[in-house]
Image 1 (tube, helix red, strand yellow):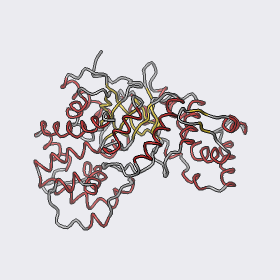
Image 2 (cartoon, rainbow, N blue to C red; image 1 turned 45 degrees about the vertical axis):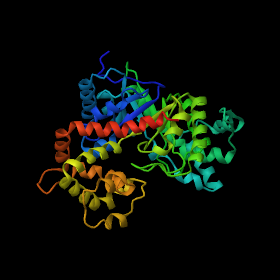
Image 3 (spheres, rainbow, N blue to C red; image 1 turned 30 degrees about the vertical axis):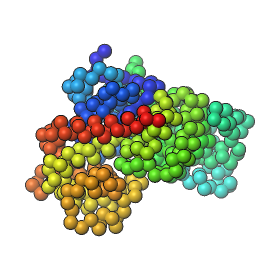
Image 4 (cartoon, rainbow, N blue to C red; image 1 turned 120 degrees about the horizontal axis):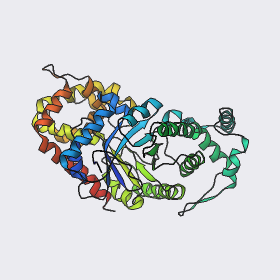
Length: 415
């Protein structure tokens, strides 16, 4: 087998390594070495590619270069993440990606959580008008059925069914359409599909998960993994916030649904740095687990910068502080405008900006501006400066990534 070609990984537990700069591969492979996780070595969303001015071909080439240099012999995957339209599918398929994550978030009706009865009925009627369901008998199978998922039995009443249908009906129909595009652009090639339903206003209830899974099955869409939104807070770049026991209980039922309806893996999005719950995730999910990380590797690149080029690191912090009010818009995070405005004299403080929550999130959410717009005092783009420092410190960069991502994998196996 040509090991520079990504392959489908099936139900083997897997770990996704996002690389926003194209130089993290050696550290990622070192973190993976000796573990029982399969690696998704090329992983980037269209959104991230846009924010970093990269192409699917560049993302794939960076992974292949690292794999060849490391003489890496294990099967590996390539995830075209958060795909929303056919053009995204075609572009990434042509670059050789074989794992396609459908993002139907634009089609989710979050307002369904609080709709009154009349509004829900109107919403269901509109689903019929839009041919999301063929006829009014669609609800009978749901209301008459009962699903034993092992941990407990799940049953819909009319209200819970209507809320799920109005909230996710168009989203699951979009998944069917996207699955068709994925098949079209991967003729005679093996591929696998993940569906992401984590970018919603409220956590995914177990009945909502069941509804989505049943609708995917009814529409003939087979998934290798599904990402719910979990209870608690999965903020970017920092540990989990919430009741761990409650999280464990909810996760057990999500995994039970995945076993009963698939089986498929549970995918943990915004999965980096959730150290307090990794043992629970690993224990409860077993092999039915996929974890996605991305921004945490960028922060380890900045750690190299902090140690080897503190002056440039300080410039990037100051620039990020100025960009924060605008760049934070698409993120759910804890760091506030007031905290950023109150930074005062900025120093190359590794602990404050790379180990503590607010500093990490400031740098995390501004990565796109730093890498595509920011310019240092010497007139060179920040991205050029960062890459120069990383290329001059390859061993340190790989060492930091191996330590940090290795901690993720070790804790996932500690449960």
